[in-house]
Image (cartoon, rainbow, N blue to C red):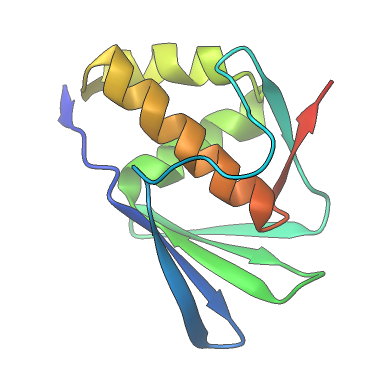
Length: 122
């Protein structure tokens, strides 16, 4: 089992850092739950680089860097988008509690939604 360390999401616009979003901050905007399903927006590009990833929103010019755990979560969101399934897979692959995993996932998805990378499906 791999070590779990979903640390932070780096947000950049046109090569200038806007902010660092720590994943244990409060969820802003409309609330997403682990029962939610999300879809990746069409105008988002994904490129994995040495176990980490860069996401680029072509519409806004914002790009984000993900650590290894964030990259794995993105891959799982690409497959299905069901947050409860993402939690189950991450629990099998990483040494993390269900509570921490769920909380981190909700925060990450909320930040991605705010940056226009994801949309919640009804």
